[in-house]
Amino acid sequence: VSVDGREVLMESLRLDQTWPGPGGLAGRMGATHALAVVVLIGPRCATAVAKLKDVVEPVAKSTVAGAAVGVSGSPDPAGHAGWLLASFSDLKVGGGDKVPGDKESPGVVARIAGPDTDSVYAVLRAALEPLGVELGAAPFAERGLA
Image (cartoon, rainbow, N blue to C red; front, top):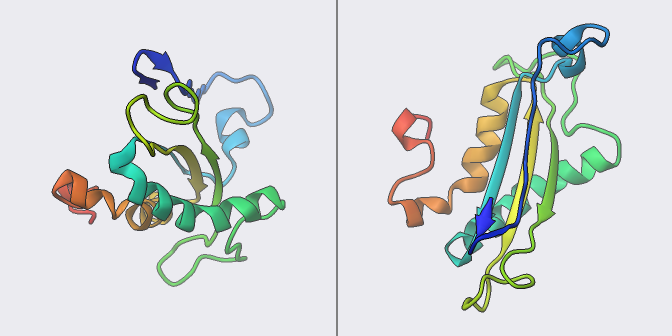
């Protein structure tokens, strides 16, 4: 991800089925079946950054403490396994912490892992809801997932 020609984030995720370790890719992933990376940068995302932080930070704190949020021994009635892992980091953008010319220009990256797409989408829908104002429609609306 670049801002004004300056790289502010290099993100890569390699899901390689040929990994030689025990169990291959499936063994490494375990019960994780959904991964998401969210990058928000700029003043138009400021409200969404705050909401993303509110939604993801408790999950991230639990992850750092060595636990997944909402871990349960069996799926809930909707079939969700009941856990999430997350991280949340501020990004340095522009010439310091701001995009040139902007007084406030937050940048963040959040990573979320869960047992199924519904669990991860639920977090994303809640966290990214403020972007609806900027986009003119709720995120995921084009897929009927809003």
